[in-house]
Length: 159
View 1 (cartoon, rainbow, N blue to C red):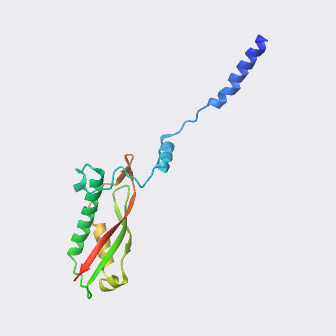
View 2: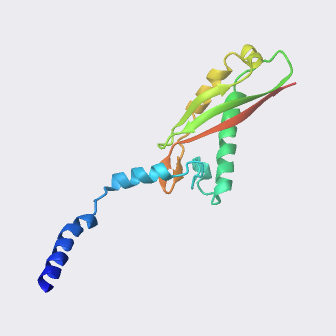
View 3: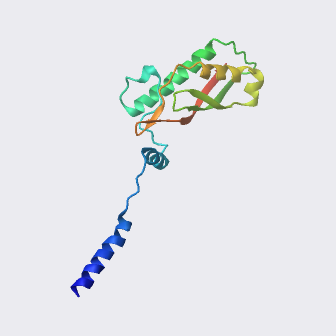
């Protein structure tokens, strides 16, 4: 009986150890899996201009980024001669992304047909303005640079 019990214990240890084998996971696999589980809507750090780097609070950094971006676009458009025939108040929507390398890309420009007719060069001026942005610091999630997409409204008003 003792021999039979010894054989059963040895066999169970021999065959049972296969169930305890571990699979080695590479760092790249772990990072890839982790990135798939990240909630991209909640960045730990928003993209920023160099002027915003010293701002500590997360929301203030986002506000600084938005103000600097708007300031740059308005400054760029200020040097252009936009002559509008009608008095208008129009909102232009720019859909943009900041790559994980910190490059700004303009994905889409939404403006009214009326504004397009009266300022046919406006889209090109906006593209140039975004292309001329200084180097940006990308958004981060868990310390990893990530692509960030957003939309910004630009108000065009004439009297």
